Image 1 (cartoon, rainbow, N blue to C red):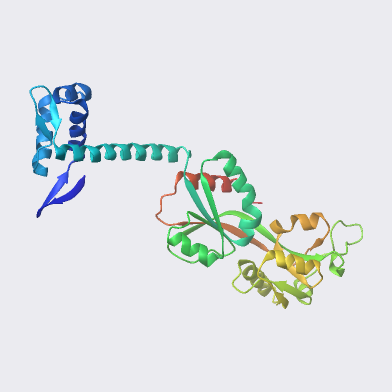
Image 2: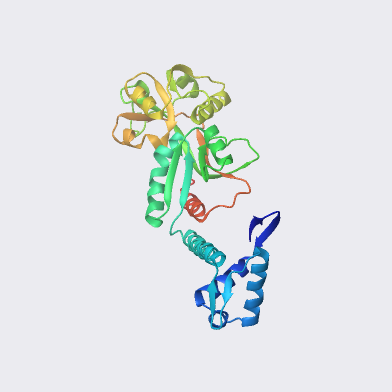
Amino acid sequence: MVICRRSLSVIVLNRNHLALFRAVAEAGGFSRAAEIIHLSQPAISMQVAELEESLGTPLFDRLPRGVRLTDAGQTLLGYAQRIRSLEGEAERAMRELRGLERGRLALGASTTIGSYLLPTVLGDFRRLHPAVELHLTIANTDEIKNRLIDRTLDLGLTEGTPPQDEALSARVFSEDDLIVIAPSNHPFAARAPGKRRPKPITARQLCAQPMIVREPGSGTREVIDRALAACQAQAEVALILGTTEAIKRAVAAGLGLAVVSRLCVGLELAGGLLVEVPVRDLKLRRPLHLLTLRGRLASPSAQAFAALLAKLPRA
């Protein structure tokens, strides 16, 4: 229903009236329109007359055979045809979105998830739904939270403790191991006799070494500090760096040990540049959370992406 103003009164354009008006105009008469849309001629005439009365102007000149549009009718017909076209576009768009034939999905992820876990998932999603436009923002948890709340993101993915905000819903979609890494020439990296891995150390031994850590407020830093506190140990911080890539390079250069996600060091471990050092009394496993805005209906593309995340291993 479209509302406009005539003088000081309100004109209500009934959608059904517009459709019947358009049918008469395109058919060239009331009788022909009645045949095409399978409605009685008196019913059509009555509703078109109601439309003319509400507008305060005639839309047709009634002729002995058929009708002719008045200037007002010609003007209104253009709008009525555009409204029909927009309705058709809206219906097609809804069908396409339901079938994931088009659409847009905006994701926000922490550095570890966005850089090391999501590329494979994004590739799988692209192969399944190539017409859906994907946008990925890599940011800290607070920024992801804010963007979910202002609806510029559809889904958020963070590690560790989820943001404590009643506006958001969080569920675990996978888990991540944090491991201690050392350069290959470090004493802790030496393999135990007859073993494939280095000899396990304790949390206190780890904390006696210079440590390279992320900045305060980082999800990884939070997990490490909490785990060490549970062992009544505290890291000897030698260097604070803002990215995991910088931390890996610093460890390889011999500047200290670090705790990082297993997800981000697969190539370095396989190539022998870095070595995983087991710590017997330190539990470093964290949940990975999918964040959504409470009360917001998930789009078909968001539902499809969440379904892919649910298939990730939870070992």
